[in-house]
Length: 136
Image (cartoon, rainbow, N blue to C red):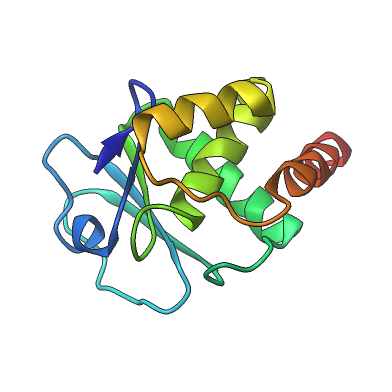
């Protein structure tokens, strides 16, 4: 597990199966996994395809899930390795909800999660998510 901000973390599938004690909300974004909901924490599953460009509507759903749970929880977003899809959702949340610039978010995530590999064309997809959120 890697801490991105005070309340936002990214992790891998093992972290999702056995969430650390400080985590109180977990979003699984690995489409190839389905795990039982961990007891005692908020749990969601919004599947993404590994290494593929994110669907803006699916990414918007994930950002909204994180946003809904962030106020009262320490939120962990997990995928298989904790490097691509989870990082991409965390980055989209920081851009779309916290209002951070993509370049600043990328720098932060690369510093906090060595080896992070955001999904292809993520910056463009985040812009589409922003537009979807404005239209809602």
